[in-house]
Length: 194
Image (cartoon, rainbow, N blue to C red; front, side):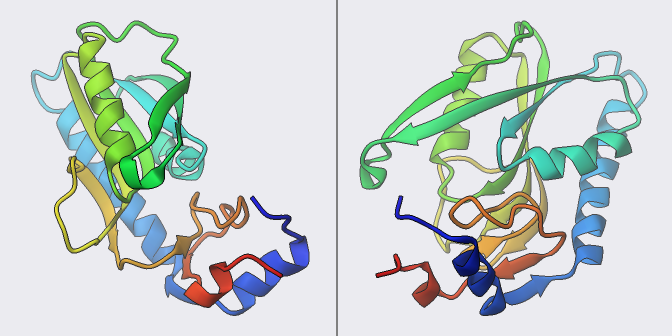
């Protein structure tokens, strides 16, 4: 990654366009929470799930979502990274695996965005291979790529255009995960500085 200074990080945002206001972000989180509450508070829903946040993008979404869930749950996190040729998918490496036993459990995987979907598809399959009874994929945002993905999320907060989006956990060069709304970055601003 090329060297990146805070002045350039500020410039990226100065040229960006806000596409989702914070109030819309909060409403999307509320909708996802309502659906999970309906599912796990339903009559006969004796099991409570293990919620797994995908680090680091999901930290903001997860932190807003958990306090709105009204059922007992276990919480842990996972950390996966992709290495190698992005065009060929690269190798997906688990930096942190769940510390709790997933065998026979309902697992709710919480992530910030469903982009290409390769990593989340791998995560879901790996958890099933580890013995999870069910894996429910919850994403704050689903990017509309205009083509099929290897996985579909079970619950989606917002659908986003196929642009580079930052805020609410999503970053540009590691910056601006902390924005309460969502912004699109201009493609010309994503080129490395001379």
